Amino acid sequence: MTKEIATEILVGQKNEHYKEEVNEALDMAISALKGGWIPITYRPATAEELEGTDYTEGNIFTCEMPEDGETVYITTDGEVVPDTFRKDGFDSYFEDNGIEYVEAWHKKPEPYKKGE
Image 1 (cartoon, rainbow, N blue to C red):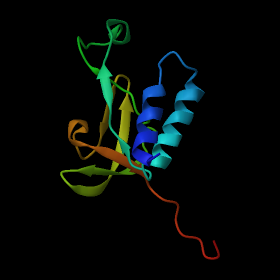
Image 2 (image 1 turned 90 degrees about the vertical axis):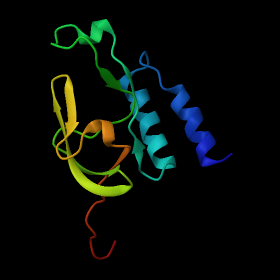
Image 3 (image 1 turned 30 degrees about the vertical axis):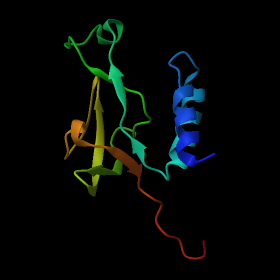
Image 4 (image 1 turned 60 degrees about the vertical axis):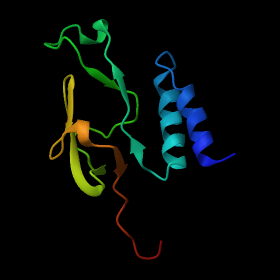
């Protein structure tokens, strides 16, 4: 089995009705298989999810996303650049690049420590 096929199988197993920990474990496995890059994926928001917001339409991420304020690497227009993810209520965005232009993101590696 290839990494690509294994990744497709795991992505297909994600389900909004699973416990959050199950989907988080699937995201971690998918990320490991993809070498750390997490493609940005989303679905249309339901009317229930939009309740209490000022929006009539929107998208919900179906992939793992960085924590609010976390600086990560993103790929956009064939380039890899650092950017900071922000979550403000229903809105989520990267500070320097429109979310619609970000293809994938990757956690910053831990700094090198001599002797490791």
